[in-house]
Each structure stands twice: as C-alpha cells, then as structure tokens.
Length: 299
Image 1 (tube, rainbow, N blue to C red):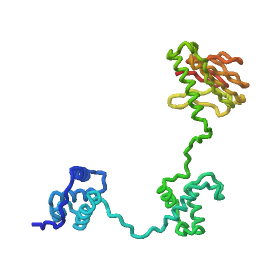
Image 2 (image 1 turned 90 degrees about the vertical axis):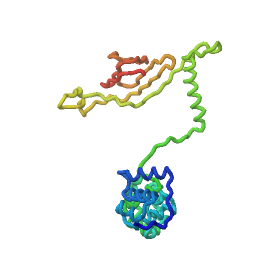
Image 3 (image 1 turned 45 degrees about the vertical axis):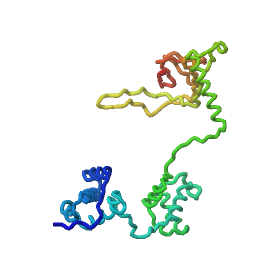
Image 4 (image 1 turned 45 degrees about the horizontal axis):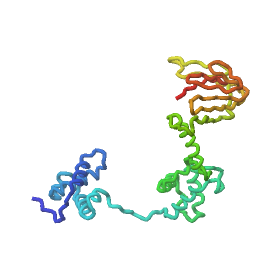
C-alpha cells in the first residue's frame, strides 16, 4: 500500500474545482497545464503521490513541484511555470529607451531623407549609431530586436493615424449656432410656432466643389459579356474639357436641392441643357456632365 504524503491537504473551492475540471478536458490548452490540473484534482481527492503517478504517467518531481507551488501560492501558481531568468538581459533598459527615443523622432530631424521610419530603416540607424551612443550590444541588433522593443512600448512609427487639431477657440460656440439653425427648421416643421414667429425662416444649406476635372470619353464603353468580360470596358484615352465648379444647395424647409455649375463644359438634366440659372433637382433626375451620367437620389 502506498505511503500517505506528509504534505498538507489541498482544499479547492467550487470555482477552482470547476476550472481545473474544464482544463483537464480541454483540447486547446497547453499539455503541461492539463497535466498539472489533473495532478491538483487527484491530490485534492486524497490520492497518494504514487497513485497519481500511476494514473497520469508523469514524473514524481513534476508532481512534487506542482503540489508545492499550489500549496504555497495558490492553484493558479501551481499551473504555471516558475519565472526564472537564466542570465541578465544583454540589452539594458537604457538601451531600449534610446531606441524608443529614436523611434519617436522624425528621420528627417536626424539627417535622413525620410518622413517616417520603416522598421528596416530604424534598425539600420540603430546599428550604425549604437556604438557612438554607448550601446554596443545594439550594433548587431536586427529588425526583430527593434520590433520587439517597439512592441513592448506599443509604438508603430511606420504608421499614421490622422487627427483633427482644434485651432478655433470659439469652435464650440459656432457649432452650437449652426446646430440651432437646423433645430429651428425642425421646430417649424413640427409646427412648434407661435404668434411672435408666424412665418418660417427660409434656410438654405450650400456647399461647393471647385476644380472638378471635366473628362470626356474618346470611345463608347463596352458592356459586360458573359464568359468573356465581367466588367464594363472603357478606353484608356480621354478628352479634357477643362475644369468646372459645382455648387449645390438644399432648401431645409422643402427638401429641394439646387445645383449650379460654372465652367466651359455645360451640364444637362434629363437631356435638357442647363443655362446660367440654378435649377431644382428632384428624385430620379439624371445629370450628365462631360460624358459622365449621375442620377440624383433624394433620401
């Protein structure tokens, strides 16, 4: 009969017991964690070390280490490897901070002909300047080493994320004034008027798109053909008709859209050429400008 272990009893909470049971049945967890979960469950059930070794086919030193860690620091520590570092890191924290400082600077400020770093360019610069900066170990550092240092500090100097700088100190006040105009239109649309303001304010929202290239086709488009061409075919050559400026406005009270085009090329709406006056657009209208057709859809 196997001798009973002299170690303390391992008491598991319901939560820990459920977690260990799920881990022993897992097919995706690390094998060593599955084995250690089985050791802790069987030891908590009162089985001897010999019986655990026989049932799980693991070594006795492994069983001892797993149980001792769980008794000393808890079940979670019993499942994990003990942290150890075989030797001191060759790349010091000061060297890593130097690499981070380079990554946070622009290459052109360091005499390089580039606006942004690439990992390769940063690794080359680190290797060239490491000895002079007093970090000789980095003289042989490659891209993977530099990438790990950047990743530890959550840095990606080779990527751009755009932001909008707040330049106008009175932006919030102006924003509220514009929003109040739209809110005023909504109040009139809902019938929330009184004797002091019997008539709605005529409000039009206007925008423009200047400098639009008016490009015409030199040959008709080729339609798709089953089994031969999946897309519409268009000739690479084109004809320039100069540039135009498109101005559009929407009547916020009625929802009608007004469009006006300035330039040498004159547009047409529903095959009717436009003169100098603005015209209202309605849902389904077809606009043609320099051989390009667009359909106006009002939502």
